[in-house]
Image (cartoon, rainbow, N blue to C red; front, side, top):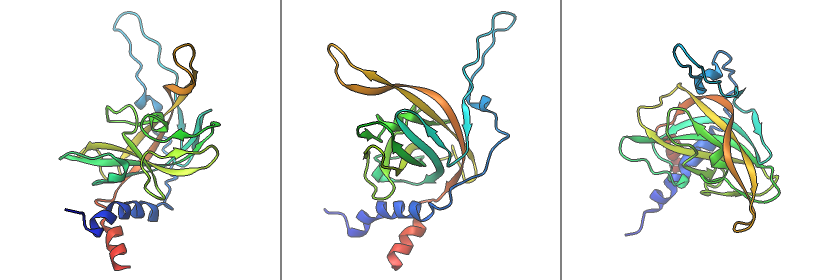
Length: 222
């Protein structure tokens, strides 16, 4: 039994809702939030203390985090019931947390924006996921897109999260990573980006858009 045209268009309408709200890039500066909330510095009672890890840079929403691999500027955090085109399918009791970012490939060859590519260079506080679980272009909803060198694109990175983990107005920490370029030899050949290391933190406020129903209703009326 084939899907109805309305059922097929629904995921695209959710992306339309995200695009329609895209001009509201948060610029609030959370100066009072210490990066210590995202770093662990442990000490042994009455004895030796371990050294704290290097302090992470704190960036504003919309500020680019630039590495040799890519430039990535976190713009917004959106909580939505589902966003199938990212290939992240929430279970019962889960929703989808979306990070919208402006991304540019700074390497000299195409890069995947998926979970094994640029999606590996950001994670969100409060989950066990070490990278984005799915990604898609914001303009055309292409899943796990490949980015050409020097061509910026808005990318939606997605995670399935418990439906009570985040709410409207919550602040979520996004950790940004720098990866190292590995050149293979002997058995392996070619170059790959590996070993993500935390380098910066961005705090963004969560927008809860429900199912994106407002966009669906607007499309239907049009």
